[in-house]
Image (tube, rainbow, N blue to C red; front, side):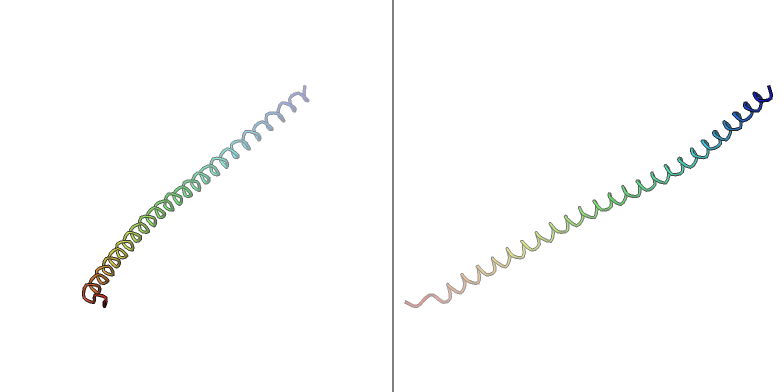
Length: 94
């Protein structure tokens, strides 16, 4: 009978240790999960910001390209007018 009581006491003690360890691991796991979620949110924020920065840079690039095209158009028009004026003022010698 003594053996049965000692065995049951050992089983109960082992079970309580198991439950305590399980609870500790659960708390640790929850903390790690929270940390990982924070890291993932941080990475998503970085990705969103990078996308916004890329879109803004693309828009600025397109605007700059349009300005350059406009300036070239003005330059070509000015050169065309200059060439026409020179031809009209200096006709070729015959």
